[in-house]
Length: 503
Image (tube, rainbow, N blue to C red; front, side):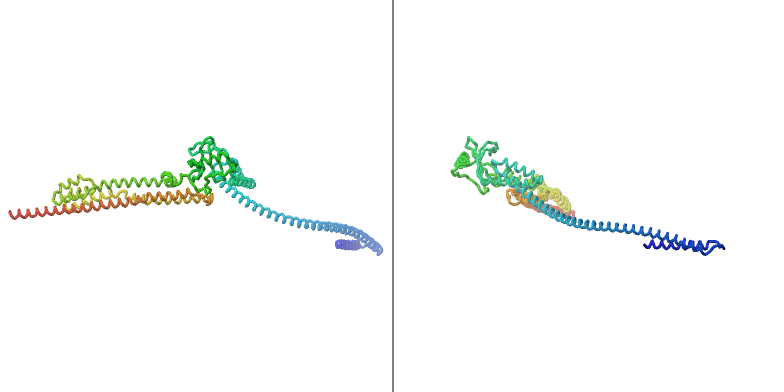
């Protein structure tokens, strides 16, 4: 409407302007009259009115069109507003559904985590069942259902590898039920056995729970019972050295079968503590040493070296220290009488450190005392290191042996704890190997070190005694030689004085 008013105002002023231009622009004519002017003015005004009316109609039409357009826009805005409200409501519903889905997802994740934990626990339990029952099957004689049990153990191992929790749980429960059925039932069945002589025989076996196993060779009187043997790979062995009465009872019980209603007396060891004759007390020295493990190799090398050095040192000391008080008394007696030449011959004929020291001393009996003492000292410096050779090595090897034994102890304890980590602390027989290794190596190291230290002490004392005797007798002979030299020198001086006096 404001735009239409502006256009009407412009048209009005345009008409007035045209009229004025018509009045002003006309040349002054003398013949123009006022009537013509008014007539033209009216026409101009009428024309302006027509134009204004037409312009007003046009503006009215445009305003109507604008109103219709505005109504259309308002209707469209109303529709859009309704659609926007509907969409907002839909979005709110979607958000509520999304929140519910998120809560459900969190719940499913929690259930999945709990299921995974339970599946892991099931896998651990089934793995423990597989190990325990597998070891039990290996340490027991063959039963009538051992083939099915081995197959179930194989399926359980496959299920553990694949992570099939339901299958492994079912197989483990079946295995446990199978072993429990064996533990509370008796059976007589046919199977192959390895007799004590190492021969495979067809036999009939008697099983009383899982505490007693026995077999009988059909057509013979041979029978045997299974007895614990922890040092053998199977964990048991067949004992056929049975009293005649026990053998007869076993043969009768196996022949009658498990269905017999009469009671049968059997030598059942329900504790499982009776072992075979291959116990530690009956084992040989080589078996004991072999059970010590790899550390026994350096211990054997140390023992061999120590024995060789001790033997060599003992022979050397016996040879070098072979002299007697009679020999020393004879040499000292000859030296006291001045028979140094005979004493030197006697010393040369005798072997040993002492004889060589006395020989060196008597060989320099004509030399000055300082040279004589130097010769004796030089001989002693050459002889004493030979006597003390290998003594430090014997002491060192004697000290190394218990250290190696301690090393074997540590490795044995480590092996024991490894076994405890795998099978737990409820299987003491499986841990006995590591403990035996620890104790055997320690005992071996001490058994090597104690004689080595004693031998070192005895040999050191022997060396010290030889050195002390050599120094003592060498000093005595040296003093006798010096006294003889002094007497000879005094005799020469007197002779010279007498000769001078006579002259």
